[in-house]
Length: 243
Image 1 (cartoon, one colour):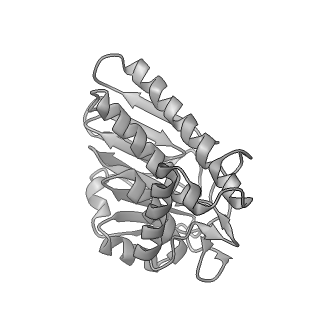
Image 2 (cartoon, rainbow, N blue to C red):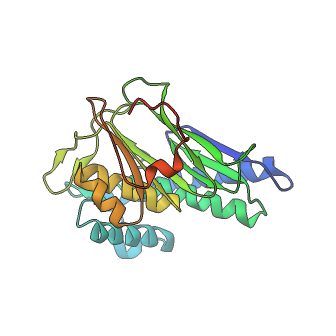
């Protein structure tokens, strides 16, 4: 998927075999949904070779979910831009969720799946809740904070690695209010889509996230941190935080 992938499985029999199956699933998703591969379904749609009523059922499902998020976010989550389809803002989280479903079907209840910084956890980590570092966008390879998860999901949208690339669909301009926005939710598909939508909203996105049942930490290029009310509950108690 053009991104680093990390899968950790702590229980069950044959965890290595489960990880191999999970990687195979991610490669299959990439072949279908990539915006870079010329033979992917998405590329063929964008070239006009496939109509929306000719799509495989799971692609139709993904696009239906994207439309649901467009409506839920009042248009701030939109996978269409200048007539081109790019469902990456939903597909990455959905793919991680599909891997989690696969691992559960194989009998695993303690695992972590990470693709490009977006994470789904299940059960406990090696020594308690999973301890997840949130990158400091001003000093890469350092942590802004740590959150602790036991079955939840963490998704981050940001500009600190790829530069400005997230558009406000209402204005057609690149969004630059935050350098990073981390969202905590129950499942990664929802957290990923919500992070993309809220990033496009700017500061108003934090109130929207709370109204949708998510917690979040946003960091701007001046080093200011903005937390939703419940985010602190996931952080390390009494830790020194740069934001």
